[in-house]
Amino acid sequence: MAVIDTDILVDYFRGLEEAARYLESLPSTSRRVTHITVMELYKGAANRRELRQIKAFLTGNGFVGLPITAEASQLAVQLVEQYGPGHGLTIPDALVAAICLVNGEQLVTGNARHFRYIPGLTAAPPPYRQGSQSSAPRATSEPDVPS
Image (cartoon, rainbow, N blue to C red; front, side):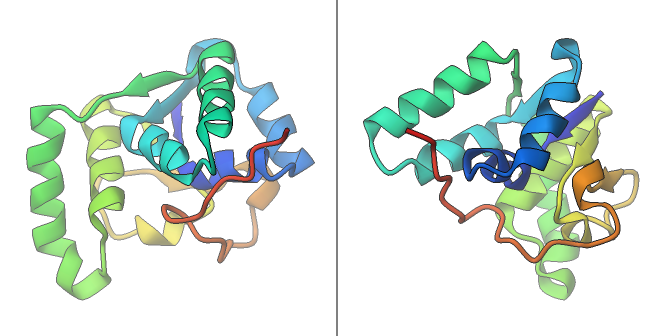
């Protein structure tokens, strides 16, 4: 199973057909997101209607939210201490990485380079992004929710 990172869902909400096909291809029992991703998507909503659409999409498509546990939080602190200064690891990325590590999950992200130096974490792009590391923004990008 794998955790889907924010950028993949932003691709979907912006209407990228490849992202839609990829997400639809995932078995409903293996659709996971971190609560960090959920918060990033909610924060990117332009209004309450878009927030409701995002929530409906996630729940209606069987995405399971992985929470920030005490163990993941403690690990994220260690990751920021170790990789923040030299690699620029951000707090959201540290939390996403820690949640994946604690749960033994692979991370599917178009921003694998943000995570490549973290031991034990497998971070790979989705098939539609293979061969090109996207420079698309991750955490701070606002999803364009279809009307």
